[in-house]
Length: 155
Image 1 (cartoon, one colour):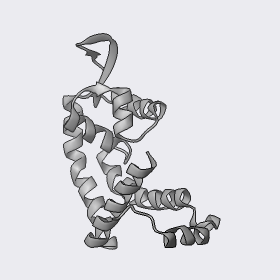
Image 2: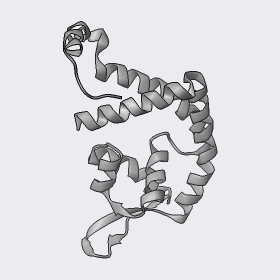
Image 3: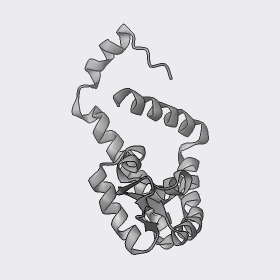
């Protein structure tokens, strides 16, 4: 997607100033609708659609500070901390001290969390497949690229 703006884009912006075209609200509505599909598929795994990506990121990245994890997941630190509490209580994440700075607690996926993540992968794949089949592979690839561009531009 080309991020260059033309004079036609500027003219078209005026037509987008009706609240029905609100970028934030439209993205939220879509996220909620898609989120329901993922929640439905994930329910049997025992993980929520918000917990799954936390465990997935920790599996890929390894132990990290909460602030770093929050920034990578585009979450507020307080929201992430609230989401980590049930994961920690279930034994899916651990909070070890940082070996380089004992004042800092890290977040790490536990062996039980790895097992739960593997178990939930099938549910996630079903949800992902369901949504992409409804929308189309080519359409999703285009939208995914556009969403990445939008995230980069608004940061």
